[in-house]
Image (cartoon, rainbow, N blue to C red):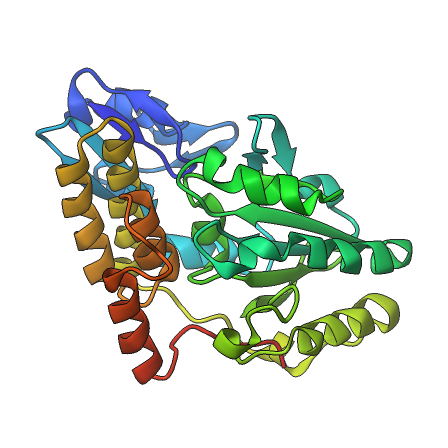
Length: 322
């Protein structure tokens, strides 16, 4: 069996999930008499399985021998308690390591987008904002939530950004920061604290008719925060809590992505459908999944049907910066 961990890394488990010691090792822990240990930390098992002790949900496909884990809602909320920005180590389009944490100690903005979104055209708009505010201490870090780095490459090359651009094929960014739609941004201050949770912020106004959100609304608020330290009203809005179902959807999507990569398209669609049912308003799962399995995420019937349902329901999850 192949195990996909919370960072999207794959680990062989010859004896499957029943081999608790191998499972613990794959997840970065050591199974000892006192429990699960890593560095100076030990988690007592108290009769629980490794997955339960670590607060992990699991999705398996026995036919294809693959499993994926995602933190439970409780474990996820524990990780972000206190408002500290989760660590984010990714790769750029060429596979080189890039880290959001390289900008620790500075005001930074996490900008998420995808090739299946019109926001793929907005990297140059974000470049203008970075050029304008770099002297005031702002650092942008961009992440494409795509299935394949090559999907993002043309838009990165067209935008020619000087700021780092990562391609997150495992959607670790979405999981850690609670992002369910793009273009979403997160603001992090010099103390590495999230001062504004994810909100929708277009880089420019190319798609204003669809977004109904003027880009300048966010950009002006960002200028005030960078130059004057003044936060917008949306900074006080609590991020919506995630459910176990929404977290499990992330594991289902990971299994689907793995199966799609190895050519098991029918099985991939099965797990993707399960993910979409668990998290019906998560665009990184719904629209991103359409693109992942070769559908049309712009004009295809599957997307337009979803868009109409979402629009009629009041655009859930599409919260602008105010």
